Length: 310
Image (tube, rainbow, N blue to C red; front, side, top):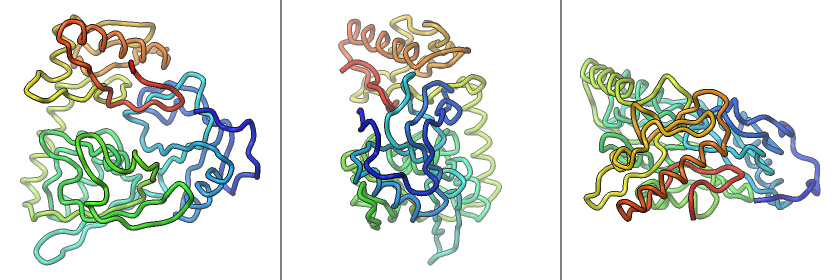
């Protein structure tokens, strides 16, 4: 979405201009953000969103940059990267269970480990999700049958005009790879989860097993965006299996390649562009649609561009 050629008011403190986004994404591709903020406080987030709203400037959040494809031309809007200023996690006992609180910038793996060390678990499969808790909540991320919405109690959010609100779990309207946050353009700040007690060694063993599985099955040695497509469901094969059956594994375009290790991953083998990656996404969609009549829906979100076919 194009924004105004210049804002009607100077940006608030901390907002920088023309910041390269590729280093902040797991694919390591994409152009610059017209405006960029790495906030340290909730007040900075509120001020930046209120400014963007008043100026008609589009905005998007960014965590660790997985599951996002930034256009080669960049993004003519405000990118808010919730990093070190929003990276706290705490766990305490509460009526025989654990109550874990995590800010949006906490990596999923860090959250899982912190909970297990405190003696609580249930969301161990999230250790393999490459993003942050903010991104995981926004898309209701899941792995090995466990979704981040399980045990979720409530969270704080900021609306596009800077208004701060607290939502209970049901208000997020969690469903497969989607929440109300997307529908209304709302930014997740932090949340709480209720977890069950777990023996430390049991949790550690499970985490090691999940990490080993991920390194064996997924291309963790090359830059990727994470899983490219949602699984079709309704008894159909997984997206990776469908891609394999249409000869997609190893397919290349420029520096981008459909991973030979897991077909639902597209990797950057060096010098890939967003156009290269998106070209492969479209090709895979077309092949699967033609052969199986199944429309693969990208999990990847576009920043400054549309991902895949309409």
